[in-house]
Length: 157
Image (tube, rainbow, N blue to C red; front, side, top):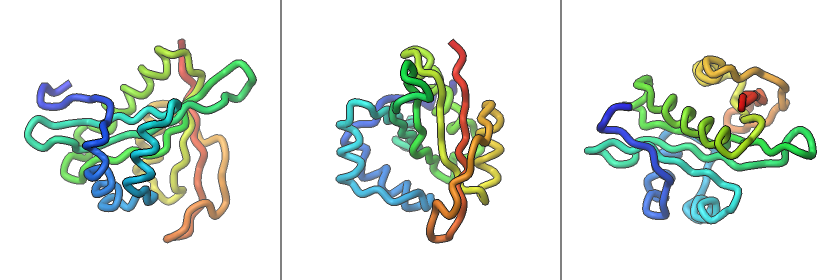
């Protein structure tokens, strides 16, 4: 990893910057209160990627959820976002790598996510990791209206 970059748990001090970044990237809207509550959830993993001179430049939020069978637990990736000027430089990869490593270290079975069917670059990004489309949620998104692809990555232990 670039020595100017590091990944750490997001703190309450990061919440206003995450709200700003989420709006800039047109991610599903979360308020500061929503994000603060998410930080306090026992089943939430909230990672930030930081750059020496710029501070927080991206984030990822996932939750542990009941797995596909009674004996398993999975991650659901809720959001990932990187500052536009830092995109296509491996920052998203570092966050996903950290999420996968966390999931494997605590014995999770899979990572699930939803992505707009029109977001081809994100779909290609996830496919590089081995995520596969396992379902479609018709008209899941609004503004603009779009289907969601449900994607799954099986974690090897």
